[in-house]
Length: 126
Image: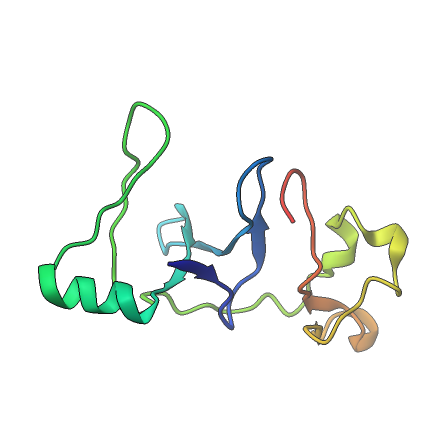
């Protein structure tokens, strides 16, 4: 099973000794923040789920945060088209060399603000 990027991925969580975890940060209508991740199963894993009907979830720590599993995205992600990710990115000093094919521009001042970037890194995240 592998965590994969989706069209709404806007952050990648990192921790030493762990694989990178792509995710989508979003806000519920009541203002509560949430994070969605997407996992791609191998053919063998799909067959195992078909056979047993079970998926096991493991978390580090002593408590379980509120969560649920789904087979498709449950969020409507509305991009903030005015933000400029470079303003809060650890890699902003590398601009424009850090740019990649995953760049999307918004409609902020000058219409040159970056709202999606596969190289975005913010405060302990990649």
